[in-house]
Length: 150
Image (cartoon, rainbow, N blue to C red; front, side, top):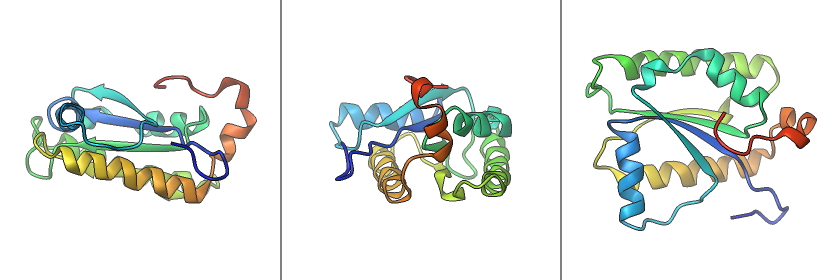
């Protein structure tokens, strides 16, 4: 799905295996329509996400990064999603300090049975990034833009 100006955002999604990945899989099974420009990297828990992973994704040319884990209070690893939420919030300040829009990075909490919420999150991020435009760091690396997950 490409916008009027030909820009098709590349979005990296770091998702937990127990909740969001299950919801994304269910969205496919339910044939829910959402933009195909998200590349999913399945993690055991979003608590594994490190600030360096997030910053490196932008440095590698991804237009946006979604981190999505279990719903608050429902993490399979007790507080992994809460740690991820704190890291994402801190990384957003760092992203802003290097001149990118912090809105390019977002944390979601999507339960395993909430496939429509996953589809809506992908649509929302795609529309947001279309408005913001391409990652300016990606222009410098146009020949080496990521083909798949970082």
